[in-house]
Length: 221
Image 1: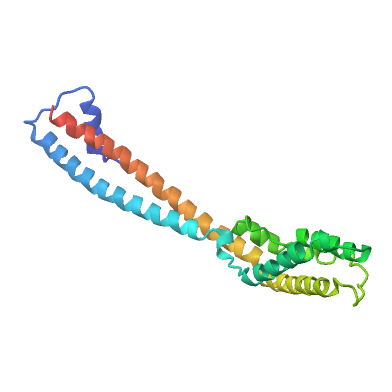
Image 2: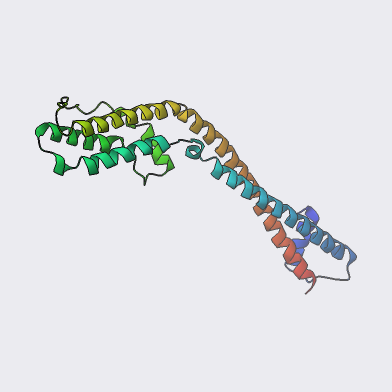
């Protein structure tokens, strides 16, 4: 805020010309310029602090703090995709038992396989949801070991069991997610409050500097 002397001079300047021969006025103008420069340095420092705090908030984004490694599940689903859609395609199905397993695998795939288009947050939410669907579907009757598709059906079934096991492991590692998100919310909210305070101070100093600049212009007319 402008001190009383500067505020009085600012009000005086609105309706009076500057007397450049008046020592008190010119002394105040010199003081105004010094304050303006000091203010500008402070404003620059505030801008830098605000920028750093905004970067910190961005880095502390709740879901970004949750690190999940989907490499193993992605490897398993790659195998499943190849075997289910290429090796065991519908052209290979010749009996009802095979059709039952084929349809079961397709439904299981839709329930348990993560989409590559899912972003980080969506992947985390899905990782906590997959296990809810592990036992939803009815498993078909065990296929005869002499069936020509027995080997591939067994392989796909084993891969899905492996996928389920890995999904359970990931789910267990995410049990702390609510605590992490709440803690991050508290931290980022405190930072945002600090940003608001700094921005308020910066705007006040910018307003003062605008008045200081008007006084300086007034003094050289």
